[in-house]
Image (cartoon, rainbow, N blue to C red; front, side):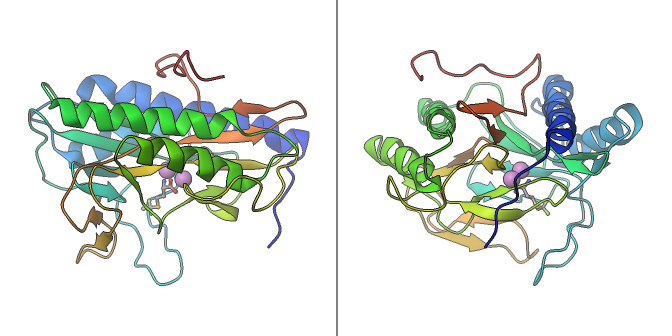
Length: 266
Ligand code: MF3
Ligand code: CO
Ligand code: CO
């Protein structure tokens, strides 16, 4: 396995793609309310990406080995859906939690980010899961630095999730990203400190923990894409794209509407 080191020209393009990704999520936020369908959210994000940003939604027709082409431009994963929820005629309702995951391609480079949206009045349990998962993401980001190991990221995420009574999904990971959507390394959201590839300046990868309120087990739905928890427990996910810098890290998927890092995390 080889992890690419991005040139300064590539890093500049990744900064742009990353910001655009986050701006799609800013744009759609006011529409993510009870009564809208996930198809309508898909359409809004698609049109904004294409017509306003002059970018391409990477998920549309994305076909990794063993998969049918993905039919939509975003992933919309509701409640016990873990990831890769395919938008459709499902109507969001009061109390739902939904992850929207977007990946525009601009000038050949990908920016990948996702957030949780809470619909109306959600349960204390749902809010707590979204909150702890957000903390897991930022704890993972906090250990990204040259000389560290990729396993440091999963270790700190797993510890925080399990300390709070939750479990970490094993089958899907963060990933290297650049001109390709998914490349080395695999960034697992569990693991041990000091294991895995060395982090070096110029590496870019995502961190995107999927945390279940119940057991870790998952199942794929008949559509060949949507992943759900086996025990039907709630699941949450947040994602950023992160650059390893000479002194630490830079989060590439930030924008004006982005929720800031929890203030207690270094
Ligand atoms: N955006 C997802 C990720 O974070 C990948 C979605 S692939 C799709 O890696 F085809 F389902 F869109
Ligand atoms: Co990703
Ligand atoms: Co994503």
